[in-house]
Image 1: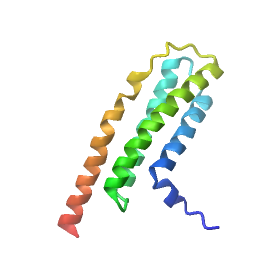
Image 2: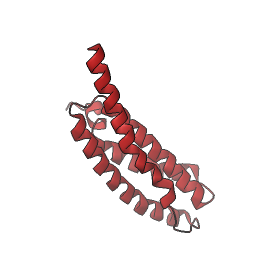
Image 3: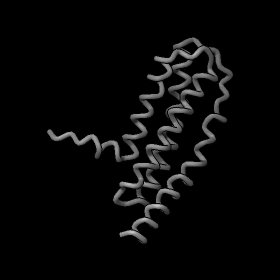
Image 4: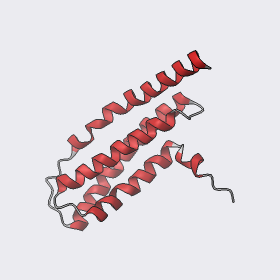
Length: 129
């Protein structure tokens, strides 16, 4: 079997799954003392996901399809991470106020990042190629 990792990582679904698995793993390894610290780790991982997602848009064959597919995967990612974070915090017996929505306001920047990459890609291909 030919396993081309690049083809899997280029798809937004696999990116979301990778970071969805990475977030609880990092939290379990780091062992934060409180829920705010755990949500901070989850936010940092989410920002890394957004950077990887926007960066790989540059290599996408169909950028608009990738754009909308990425937005859908990100919404699903946020729903699943909210559920998994509650489970991880309970397993670690960390007290939390169950208020974590502010940490993921970064979501509003994803469409802008993706559109910026698409604009730069268009300008580069228009002017230099």
